[in-house]
Image 1: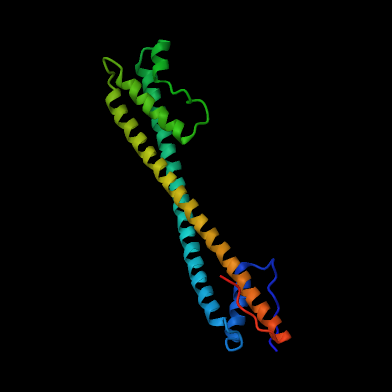
Image 2: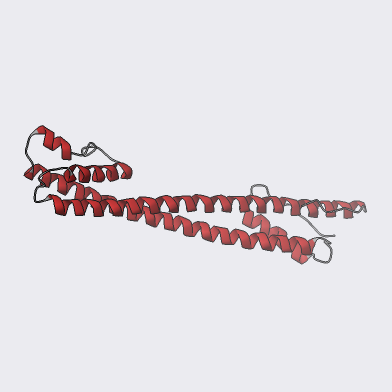
Length: 207
């Protein structure tokens, strides 16, 4: 008689699946559903491995995008501060002029989107100065370059985050499907053994 020890509910999925597949392979002749179940397990195992790899790739891409965005933020903040210092040096010290080029969040902890807004706001303010001081032309180029770089980094990070979440969801759905398949296979084997012990025929559970 085949000895069957059901997998522990607390056992990891990989361990449970390996136990079931090993049993199916060992007793192909005795279990009429063994071949079909082995095909199912192989397909799901391959799908899960693929999705885990793609999920890991998406996670690495997101982390790389975050790191790049942080570098862009640092450069953007330095550009913003440098142009503000130039403005403070060259512009009339009257409060109206200083307020025109001061970033509202300059002295606070800002998010990447707030920093992007500060860059664009300062560029717009400098472009309105008439006549334009000598530092404005170069400063506008620097501000635009920093803003474009930061905007692209923000967009890339957002797309990588969306891809990471999507791949993580696919991995979880495949894992859940594999868990249900293992439970079905376990039930098929348990029913077969119960039927063999009682001499009654058993039929496979529906997929």
